[in-house]
Structures are given as structure tokens and as C-alpha cells.
Length: 437
Image (cartoon, rainbow, N blue to C red; front, side, top):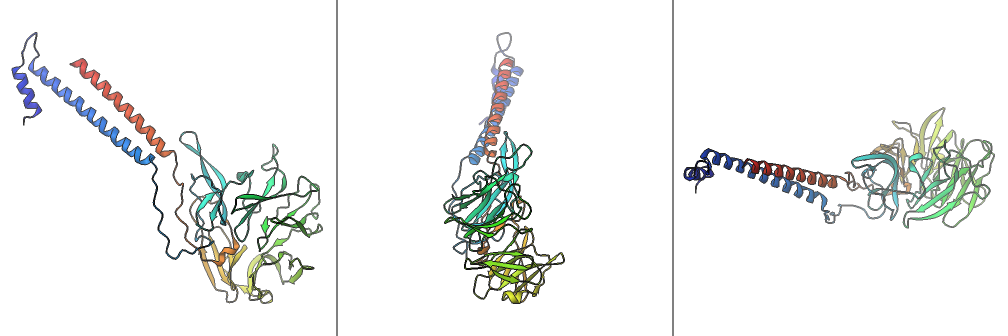
């Protein structure tokens, strides 16, 4: 087999010369130019094919198989070991069951062809699967509201509550308070919309929205426009069956401190804890210091824990009974901020920040640190379903929606543009060769 050069040499040696022929050296030059054009065209086609294959692999959706079951993964609702925000590009979803955590994080929405816009958004963590997903509540502009105080998650994780607002004025970030709404996370139905019949608008009281320990009542404090500082009322709403129970009538200067006591609406004022069981007058428990937060174990023996204010310093107290807890100070390496729930009859969970919680034995003072900070741009400490502390914590699955969904289409567009450019270069090269030939 002869090479291209040998064949061209042979052709040049036998080719005619002169005015009607082609000189040998010119025939050789033409052959080399033709070879270069063919190599360039081949390279262009090869590059375009590689680009199209890459785009096809990126654009064509794949259906992964079912993930293998996690060894030892418990059935039923549970809290995750860490609270992850959803992927910033994930789409919002509707809840299909109990929620373990409710939080706020930065979510990215497309802006233009290649840009993105980050906005604070509400997210939830499924108590069944541990998946985190963006949660859009009807008529709620989350970007103008903080999580704490404006939203509530029931201890059993089944209900989410939020305050309902009217249109905001030109100089207002949020509109006037009209009432409250509750959503059932199992059916995704908005089952409760309430406001006081006496007035369309209600006065802010800057008190946290909360559920009772049995997840039966929504607890609110409010006043009417124009009322004074002692005119707010503390009200429990039976949102599943209807009804409104005024727990405290106007007359108090400070707002109540809400607590968690099963079978009762519980609140504190100063050093006194009040328990309204619905049977007669409230039960009063007198403590030796101001009560900042408190909770009782849901059993007859009633182990108790509370955060007490000692001249501006907050400390944790606890014991097997409320009487034993009065002066039993528990050692902590940080100042406690809130009581999150009970793991069992002797271990209470105390929160300080969005990153760690502490599980404290109320009888011995033994402390276990639990790191719960997950992935994503979480803005503040999530709300956790208090009852779920009594189950094992389970690692969450991998986050979804962490990459820009427009990327495959941008790749496709880039590949098409590159292919068009290569085609144009090939056409120019062919025209140039023909002119020289």
C-alpha cells in the first residue's frame, strides 16, 4: 500500500505540463491543501459529536432504582439527626404527613437566563422520610416575617399555624393582623381561619404563636386597636372542633410565658405557674424565682424542668417532681434559652442555638450534646415537633435540588452554538480551498 505522498509524486511525474497542464509542484500543493481541509472537517465533526453526546447525557432524565433500605431505620415519625434545608433550586411541595421540623432558609429562584435571586423561604422536614422540602403557605409572604413568633408547629407535627395579615401599607413591611390559620399536614387542608368577631383588625402583642402540649389548642395573645398595655387577652382556640376559651382576661401588664404540660393549657407569670385543665379553677404552682420556660413529662409522676431567672442569669432546674425541681439547679456549660421537649421521663432537651441542643438528666445532671446543624443556608433555629424527641433520631437522606436546573439546557445551547461555529468555519475553509484550486 502506497502513501498519499507517493501517489501524488507518481501523479505529478506523469501529469502534462505547460499551458494546458498543471505543474507538478502546484499539484503537490493542491493535495496538501485538500488534506488539511479534510482533517479540519473531521476534527469539527468529532468535536460536535462529543458535545452532543455530553448534552444528551445531561438532558435525558434517568430514573434511579429504589434506594436500599437503611439498616435499623425505625418506622413511624421521627426527628432527623441534623436539620437540612432543601437544595436551593428544589421545587416547593405539599406535605403528605407529619412534619418533624419547620425552618427558614435561603431559596434560589431563576432570574433572567443565567442569574438567580435568593429569598428567605419556609421549609419543612418530613417526619416519615426525613426529606426536606420548600413549603409555600397560602397568602403568606415569608420574606417579610421572622420564623419565631409568627409560625408554630404542633408537638405531634401534624399542624402548622401562622398569623393571617391584611395588605401592607406603603410604609409597612407587613399588613395588620387579622387572625390565624392552621393547616393539617396530613391532608394539606387549611382547616382553621379565625379572628375576633369584635374587630376586623387586631393589635400586635409580640407574643409567640404556640400550640398546647396535646396539640389540641392554638394559643394566642392579642388586643384591639387603640387598647392600652394591659388590655390584651390570652385565648385558647379549639381549632379542630371550634370554640374559643379566654384563659386570661385583660388586666395584666406582661404577656404570659407559655409552657408544655400535657392535659392542660400552661403558662407562667413571674414566679407562678398556672395550669388550666378545663375542670374548675387553674392550678397554681409557686416557684422560688421567675419562670422563663417550663415543661412537665406526660405522666402521673410529672417530672419537671424549668428555666429560672436568677437576677438576669438563666439557669436550668429539674427533678422527678415539680417540688423536687424547685431548687435543683442542673449544671450546663451554656445559658439555656428554651425547653424543646422530653426524650424520656428523666431526660429533657434544652435549646440554645440552631447548631446544638443538650439532653439533660433532670435527676443526675448528666448532659449530652447533640449537634443538629445541617446543610443549606438556614437562617435561624428551626421549630421542632416536641413529641418526636421520644423516638430515635434518624439520619436524613441526601438533599435534592442542589444544582441549577437550567444547566443542561445551557449546555445544549452552548453545544449547538459551538456546532454552528464549527460548521461556519468548515464552510469558509472549503470556499477558500475552491478559490485556490
